[in-house]
Image (cartoon, rainbow, N blue to C red; front, side):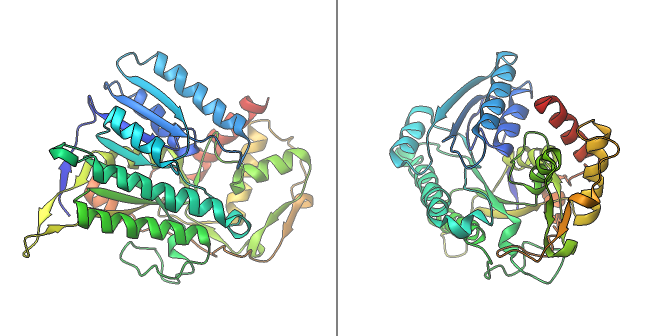
Length: 362
């Protein structure tokens, strides 16, 4: 699909989930780009995990904003499930680009807490779509590009690898995955009906400094520091396409600058300006190898002592409900259309995480 180039210079950009792992790193990247922008961040700062991490990320953003006087940074605490709030933000700021990263994350958490996934991932995303739709009211220019987070979880238990966006993905194995596939379907319908340029991004196991503590690399580190035992699912027979957060952000920024072009079909009606891409490293890592690398980097950074008995703190356990044995991204389309493929390997990525962890926790 052909793209409509978008310059970020002087644009008003709304980032939802701005205090989250990917959202905060995206805002930091935009603030340090040197280009003037009006950045609006929204986050409900919920307690799904330790909110002090979100406060830390917001402080990092505020420091960057002070050093970037050419840009304006505005943070709004609130939920995208609050329709009145979202409508007011669109009315007050008229965003040119919307990056929807706000979502309730976590596969296993969705098994016991389905309501929060429906509220944030379905109702919240619907509110964003409706606000984008009405941004064109009265002949206004409106939103030029909606970019939103999907997930590799939509592939479920697909046996064919690597996972391609051309693959059939209608057999989710978790409610979280079902909500993310629903986002893609809703975006397609709104793109077709209201000519909203939208791009969905299927992220593959994102990791890095100041990440989500419920992610394996982070929770395993905390358990090892406490002397607890880490559980390794499916007896270690798992492969994951780990993607360092800087690579994810680079992909998002490039996608923001190329919206699916609005075109008219033979029937005189708009063709949906809609696209979906994978963002993943394209090199699945065996979970046991990943853990070994993590251990080595934690020792190197001084988080754990050199004589730490790792074998005594490992437990091989069966696969958990909602989990999948492997993820593997085919990112050829992203490279073709945006000239980018993730570059940062797990050794470098886990080293950066371990060094941050040592500094943050002392």
